[in-house]
Length: 364
Image (cartoon, rainbow, N blue to C red; front, side):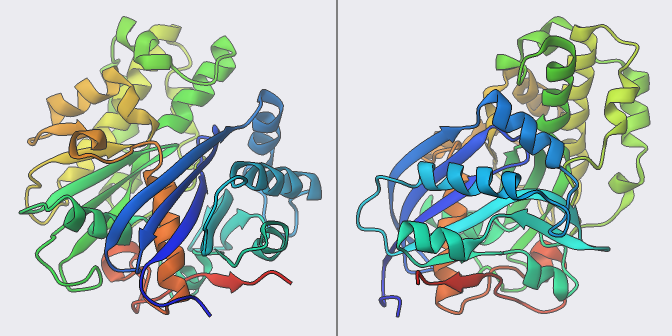
């Protein structure tokens, strides 16, 4: 049995940008945050990143054992060396996401991980939500609600995660619980770092546009930007979610541009998707707090600040860790799953009923 009260949980997240595994510890009872613990980052090698990129779009019945072993080995390596852990939250690696069709696929077996770590592991967070008609994403919003309480926000605040895909959470911290009516609105804004990373890899053999330097040397081509914003996704009402490769046509839209203009235009596309998303907020947030790799891109951040009507700040401005926030979220959600608490609701994924997702596996 999981102990009552505060639990020390270890969460791991490997996002769609395919850069590596983030691991973080938090202390929580599944409602409030008591404290933050150690963190660790395990980067994927160029070879591992290439293997994972080649596996994108594959489902449980087609993904190779070598790919799954790579993911599990990387997570075990990343989660080694932590003391006093009661519970692990293992998100796995998203390879395919089609909530209206085949469902969602996060590769990696939590039971095998539990056996190797000797700790109880919560995993497969998204499937239950999808089975009940939800998008299965984003799942961090319940944690964002707890963070809004922790930073003592005195009005609505928004969290923006700029990973491979962008996602926005609008929070009203005056509500009692995250599943309370009007407490949360969350959805994927559109592509963020993933297509920019793909562009850099294809054209320059580099994993990403470091500090947005290449984009800063270029100009946003408005014709390509307008074609991008004409995609039907931006006309859908939230909640809504995306697969990493849902906007593959972005590379085609900038194919004729030089490297700098292509990077600038794709960065502008990601920022403009966020601007469109902000129009859905029930009330203007006091601040847009940014986490994920995109917050380290000054070009991206400048475009965002120029296009939204509130201050745009990295989450470090309020004492949070923007690199580890997603990993912390799955530590927090693991505790909620283990305690029978919900992890998503209509306002976050569009699910028909408030649901607690995840499987709890104990070591054999």
